[in-house]
Figure (cartoon, rainbow, N blue to C red):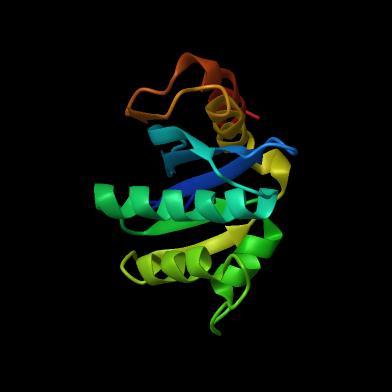
Length: 162
């Protein structure tokens, strides 16, 4: 189950979705405050992606970029992609095929205060997961600020009232 961040902090959950056998992916990101209130979110369709891990790495970078662009500080990032979280927390240079995205994200993270990335179970990442799945079916990128889209109301409510 989703847990709110500490007071005066934000939590950014990220997730990726990929359609095997295609080059289509989607990224979902949701930002919430310590009361569970929706702050921001996005759903971004990706093209020319080749694995679930690549999409998850791009989701982490997307969440980090959103935090930077909006000037968010005291941020906890969460992802259910253990491989990506482990790579982002590793202090050595990532020389894997995902290395350029991972290293770019690490560099961006140095400009944001907070705990960095932590791994969570998929059950605690429902809103970002739904946004990522939604992104597979849109034409580009959608962003929401302050007011969430209707199709995530139920999960946002469950997260804060369970």
